Image 1: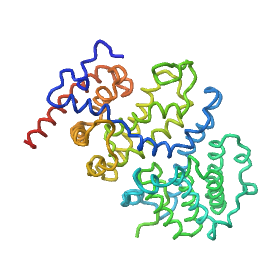
Image 2: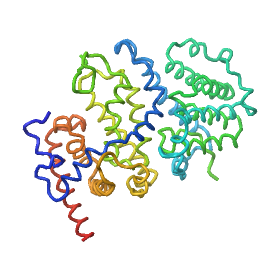
Image 3: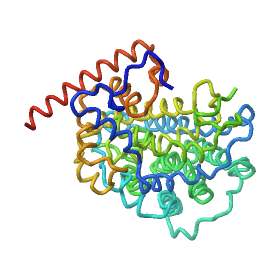
Image 4: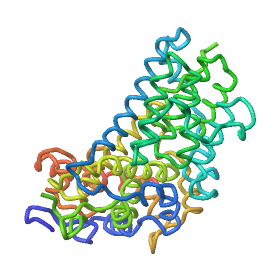
Length: 242
Length: 181
């Protein structure tokens, strides 16, 4: 492992001045505790239990699609936001104070004291209430008519997720109501999905376009609290600064 | 050809599953992020981000590097992005009250809270590149050749950074001892 050119490691106690040897040596043993690892495992459960790709050269497409969609959705939302007069000053939006509430961190109750899928489930609930504007029970669990034949047929969940959200994003300009319905459908079909943040970005933008400002604001605030460090922070359709 | 064995990949040349990557490297990703300047309270979020990236990229991993160096290169990028976002938000990643959080999270094995806090404070005196080289070599146990590969820099640059990092670390420790004496 060690090449001849490598100097002796201080962490092995070799030539380490002062207390640095013991500090670095202790750091080597300072790995995640069982509890910390369990918490992380609970968050990652959907992807840890997913079947690995059978043939590396044959099937990376769906994951590329999922990864590409993340960028696409974010970019799309940014473009949409930029087209709106109130979002003409993105620095103001990005400079908006972002609350770093305890719930937003890994130690927050929303993520750690809840069951493994609590985070995703709670987002699914938000989509229900936000999209229907009424009781969550009114939301139809079946795929929407003409909405997502490709997503419904897709055999891979990640691909289906990505396809559904891509359709939602595409519908945003012409029919924000349809975009919202598709976001709702995503929440129902993929309560523990990998693209929940992307879904929220779309749903918030759709609500704003539908004039449901209060719901959009509340949802954006919840997004901030839940994902304060999200890469999609700047893609979220913000309320206009007063 | 996919490389296996000690790299963390499967010995039969097949691609490791996410479960295998997590089980083998999860604890160490956490350790690396902690020492790369991610605030303790944010290590869970950033670790999650690392494994989401791994999940997305794993099918594209061709084994030109070892799985472990590939994984740590992802750690480095995610940690760097995290620091940049924290800077934009005008947060100071390592400025949180360490002791409070550590008391609740505990330390692994026989590492004391004081040792951890001291080392993190000293590492905070290093710039990100030097810090990364020192952490990868001294704590994560990579060879300097691997460090250079992870950092995507010439080997000689990696050596220079290690040398500078050690000097700076020593200075910081002397200063620390001077102020506490």
